[in-house]
Image (cartoon, rainbow, N blue to C red):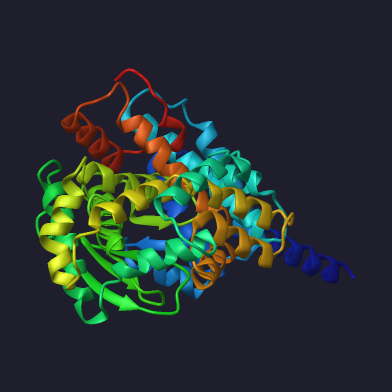
Length: 436
C-alpha cells in the first residue's frame, strides 16, 4: 500500500510538472522583443484555426512550420493572448518615442486577437463592439436617410426613366474595359501610380509585383504581400472592370497603397529595427484600418485636382479603345457616388446586427450604392465573409484624409505625412488633427 501511494504521488507530481511546463509563461526578464516573438507565433497559430486571418507573413519559415504542425486550441490561444497583454502591461509605461509607439501598437494588435478569439469561440458581439475590438474604431453608422440628398444630386446628373441604380449602372457600363485590353490598362495605371509615389517616397531597390486576374471572389482587388519587397496583386473579373477601377486599384493595391505600405514596414521596421511583429499581418486588426484608409486616400494624393482625368484621357482611354468624350462626366459621377460610401457601413451594421435580412441588405445596397443586383450581391457576400471590416474603407479614408490634410497642408507635406504613416507604428487613435 505504501508503495502504491508512493507511485501515485510520483505520477501526480510528474503530471503537474508536465502541465506546468506546457503553460506559456513570461520570461524572468521580459522585454518587447520576447513579447513580439511570442505574438508572431500566436498570430500564426491563430491563422491555422481561422482561414484568412494571416494576410501576410515573411518571417522565419520554421515559425510557420511549427504553427502548422501543432497549433494550440482556441481556448489555449485565448489564454496565451491574455498573457501577452498582461506581459505588455507589466512593462514600463511607453514613452513618447518610436519605441513607445511600438508598445502601444503591439498592445492594440493583441487586443484585436483577443477579440477575434472571442468571436471564434461563439461570443456574439454587436457591429460596433466588433469594430472597436478588432480595429480600435467606433464606427457610429449614420442613418441611411442622410444619404438621400446625395441620391437627389445624382438624379440630376443621370436623368432619364427607370430606377436610378439601373440608370447609373447603364451609364457606367459604357466605360467597361474590354477583357483583352485589361492587362495593358491595369499595368499602365499601376506604373503611373508608382511613378507618382516614387517621386515623393523613396522605394526599396528591387521592389516589384506580379499581376493576376481571378474570378469567384467577394472582393474586386487584393494585394498578397510576399515579403522581400514583392506583392501578388489580383484583380477580380467576376464583374466587368470599368475605367474608374484602373487608377483606383493601381493606387489602392499598389502605390501608395498596400504594396508600398507593406514594403516600407518591412524595410524600416522589420529589417531596419528588427521588430519581428511587422513580419506578420493579421487581417482583423487595427493595422487594417490604417492599410485600407491610406490605400483609399492614396488615389486622391497621387492624382490631385484634374490630374487623374488628364492621365486617363491621354493614356488609359486609348489603351482601352474607349472614347474619352464623356470621361469628365463619368469621373464627376464617380466622385459624387463616393459620397455614399458611409451607407455601406450603415447597411452592414443593420445586417450583421440582425435588424434586416440578406434580401433587404441587397436591396438597400442597390439603392444606396447605385449598383446592379449582381454587384449588390457581391458586396453583401463581402460583408458575410469579412463582417465589420467594411469600416476600414470609407471611414478609414475619411480619417486618414483629415489627418494628412490637417491645416490645409500643401501637397509635399501631405506626402511626408503619408510616408510617416506607412513607415512607423501607427494606430487609428492617432488619426486626430494635432500640431506636428
